[in-house]
Image (tube, rainbow, N blue to C red; front, top):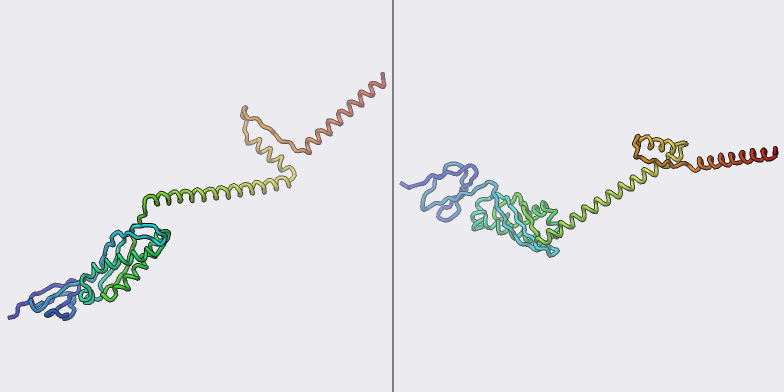
Length: 251
């Protein structure tokens, strides 16, 4: 009687059967009989797997040193290739991803590295997926996690950001002052073109001051009104001179 062993293959696995050292086929989930000495079965996880890409020190295109790490998601699509064509596909995938990350980040400027993480991750994914396709692997996604820059560069970037915020605030204030001045100029044109408009505005201002004893109100008078006062004063002086002259004649 030939001894045998019953092995269980789970739903998320595939079994690779080797008979006398040669690949003998793939086993589906369920129970599988394995004959010791003559046969050996290796199980392969078909789920999406996660690999941590350790921190990589890279010099960017504009000669700025940065440290970048990330995470890689992949799955096995051809288990026989993943086992037969590469010794340890998880380790090989991790090494390939580290190399691709350094190459892609090293070809970009610091500004692009900081602002285009998704695009960089997609580019690294395409490079790694193309290079590991013959291993029976499919790279689903790569995400950059942390991008670290030197401390002195961080301080410089912080000062630059503060200066940029102050610049925007100054521009906004200047635009607001310009708009307010334009509105005042338009209002002045309307009031001067309307008969009695300036006088009405002056009365509204006086009414808004309130009955406070400490308020000192200076009312500007139109030049036309001052000219009228001058004419009235001149007339009064003429009348006084005329009366004085008549009194002198009677004497």
